[in-house]
Length: 240
Image (spheres, rainbow, N blue to C red):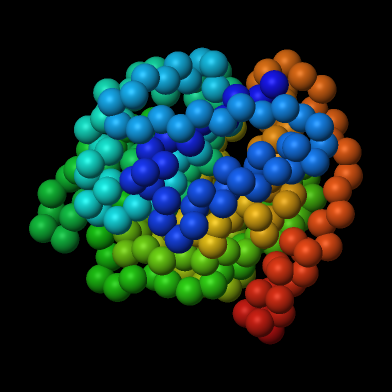
């Protein structure tokens, strides 16, 4: 059985981010892979060593401030689990929190968890709209589609991006990169939510979670026509 943790579902569920959990679980169920989902809120305990897939979503500044202090208390246990292969999907505010700091307009450095080699600074305008990126899943090039809406500009250090921007803004609107990858951690600004549209990414996360649990990770094929059609519409609309 895979154990999935949705961290702060009551605070971090911007733009339907909960759909990422739904998509992950459903694609497991279609294959007969049993899944247990635990929701962990502020002040509740969790052992990251027992988790196979962790989801950390986005929220407004108010919600992120509420959970930031709680998440900092979990920093070392989360860092250790990540180094041992915990599969993580972090979206928007969750993505930023895994980095070194957030630099405000006033020049204040708000510390992050310091787990990933990245930082974020406040931008002058919001980066908003549908986005398409080119990524690689198990060595196969794929287009990933989603919706971005963020004013923070993130700059990654010595890590792979999730992908290269084909249309849209990405991490900062400057370097044409989107998201970040470190070990089994996947970060992105793509809401919408991300996983229901992008079945190949969802399946990669499932495979990695199965490997973490020591289970057979070869996945049976599913009919992905609807998911691929959804991405195809966005690609056709944005990519000339």
